[in-house]
Length: 325
Length: 283
Image (tube, rainbow over the protein chains, first blue to last red):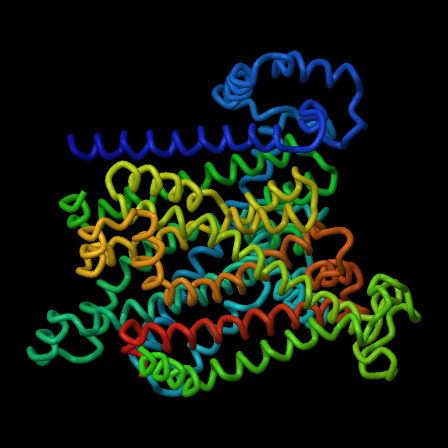
């Protein structure tokens, strides 16, 4: 039963992280200047007295600190992330309505950046010191230093506004009434620019890591053996070096997933993509702190889930990990 | 020791990218220092007609923005804020990460376990989202921004220092200090940490770059210090009139790009110069 034990352990660990984030949210509300009820209601001063009184009652704001913490966590236990006074809706419902768009965007950007980053990293490593290596390394350096929101704006000017190749903003053509495959195509068309700009930085990151990892593996004894056997360079690169260089890069990519979710806030803001990143921006503009903390919690939960998934895939793919752990 | 240092200097000087980065960085530093003398009036003041194109009027070489504010003046004042926040928030991250990593690496055992769980937790949280939440709830100000960036960027420092300290503490000169009866804090600060300085400097220079990126992203979302003109704010402010006034968003974004690129080049140059063994595969 080692797999069941492993799974139970990882799930328990993930739940602990989520508990810690809920506590962190509570501490942040307490650290905010002013009345905690006001902070939870958001839009300082605009909430009516009845609602504030309800909040005080529910979260026991006149009770001792520990009791308040318990009352706050109790909400999270039943997946009640609070109520957005501004939008007059439960926070969780607002987030769930926006989650699919974010999953689509970050998922596409992740696959694109990982695939292209690896290919570029392999190409650069095969031609160390040559012109194409320098070009790839330079491109990685440039993308790595470019502010995400700025490159998103530039891409918007050039490819959407000037050239008109792709739509400027949004998730789908409003009022077109497309259904089925036609609708999927339309959404895909809108997805291209946001996914590319979001993925660019990570592509640069993965290309650099893949290149370094390839060069490291290339010096290993089993590669020398393969070469001594007379295998062609192409086969050595594909079967021996790339396969072994892949694993550390995928591990790091899994750990970087949190940053991808953070980057979605900027991309979704620029492209008016209706995901939870855009929702976070709206919550900021309206000082809707209940919603803001809810989005923070759900995006952390997304990262925890993704890390869990990577762990499981890993164990399935590489039997050595079981032996090590 | 001095010849080792000289070699490091030579290695840095031989790296063309690092030298270019250093020159650009010095240029930005000069602009940041001299900015308020060249542009003594507040960068928030409306000094000309709105939407003046760049390279047309001599008074406004980079044009004016949506409200008629001088973009060149904004860039000069923004350079200060960016560099300042980059440096201070990196110091905050080092102040959290170095002691935590040193304690974990030196003592090992349950202290190491606890410290690493804590670090892992902070690495799991989406850092940009955490920074947004911290700044929004504590209200945007220089202090809250620096704190937020520091809080989200220390974990790699702690991991690095822990690893360095773990390998250094078994060295003979550290064992000798233990045998001589030196106090533990003294051993950590005078025997172990000084030998871990090189990788910390390298990481620090790269962290200043990412801190500047992070600050600009926060400002872009409207979470900058409301009293300070920042590059990120300028990009965000020009965003609504992108088609007819591209320069309003373009120049400040380019300034961020140039600064971050220069810092990354310098950081990589330092890495090659100070850790020659680690980068042997490059040349």
